[in-house]
Figure 1 (tube, rainbow, N blue to C red):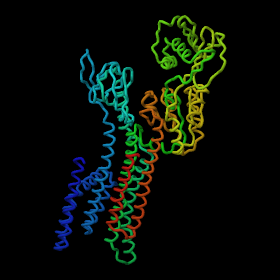
Figure 2 (figure 1 turned 90 degrees about the vertical axis):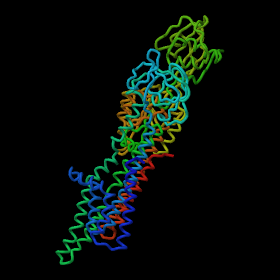
Figure 3 (figure 1 turned 45 degrees about the vertical axis):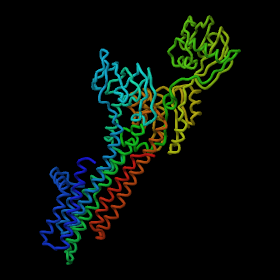
Length: 624
């Protein structure tokens, strides 16, 4: 509880004591009306001076119709009519409700602030071999920095010395430490747990992961959802309408009675008008709905999902079509040997060894995967006469034997018969001294939870899942069948992906949204075109992250399902609050206009509904 909240709490306690004393003294002593008024003005002044001041400022600024004005008019009116205790009680319970709301908002802000407490205070830069503690903003690309155990990684970089474990929970929501060593790229905001490391910076601080995360979360509240915009517009017209309605209720019936020759009963109808004002205060809606979205964004952030605005959180709940890029999204974007098929008397070990040595001089990812699968150090002195054959493969002599390794076109060019075509990925055919030795299948590995993600999306109401890829038909078909995608399109250029998404957008319903999930630079146009763009944040390109509306910090596609669940739950809470608040107020307004509801019911309809709605809104902060 902050200083301001403690101050309000003290005022509430003092007011309760003074109000009880005033009620007791008036019951026992029956003092003069002026003394009685002074007894109740004291607690009223303690609890309501700030509301009266705000109402006065609003009138001077010509911004009259707000909750402060409603409370001031209702309570001052009650005091003028002699309902002193009710006037003080209305102001007292309103302040109690405001305190509840302040604590709830503070809790949600602390939740996000704790999550986002990842901005490093300094960086240990090595300059002339000596560590120098500087502001991260002053570190340039390519400088060496030292990160000691317990310190935050200040800037994105590549480890050049040392091994350690990193706590990446603030970035990804993942509690399991990540083991890293030389050559690994690491992100600012991670916490070094075990060993000292040196890293070479690859970004300036303003472009680093931690800066982008903080910027996304800080600016998310600026983008209002339709529900929030509805409440803003609603309050703009609703508040003056009920003020004029209360004025009409106070004046028209007495005037009509007077014209008909009856007693006007001014006091009774003024009380009804004031009661009408107290009931009508829209605080519950104005406060609880933005708080619900703020809580939903905080819950998503705590799980490694950055939503750039409450409008996108709301749009997720209406998503019925999800389109995926393949590489880096549904697959790991890392090539691995997934099959070895020797022929003509060669063994698997022979085939892999010849291929690894032939490809030993190439930096291509497929070559790297062959060397990784071989798993032993390569003696480069065994390899002679390496020749790259552009678009086909490589020719080399390994221990005096002529080796060809490449695609089927290379084999055809050299007159070597490939006895059987295989599917499942990229094929590396190998020939030894003109004899076909077999082929090795290299595939982009499907992410382990990709199939589970698609099942989860179906459970959450997704009608169709689609995969778009620039890979071959065989590769696309293999991945689609492995994970259970509904539809796929292969051999697409970036422009073709946009066209495919345009077609899907034209086919969907007006109230249905389409989300695209991608990670590469070539995905940026599609991410921007889709109703919702979802980017992989850990390995995704800067262009994709900038274009996206939602960023998954650990590249886990299962987080898409979680994001949808958070969105649906948040919207459910928002709708509950709207229906509850409007329903209770409508009933109480009718009762108040008919004279069947007094100030105490009015207090419940205003403060009680607000407290219950705010407490309900805080549920959006947590997701089981």
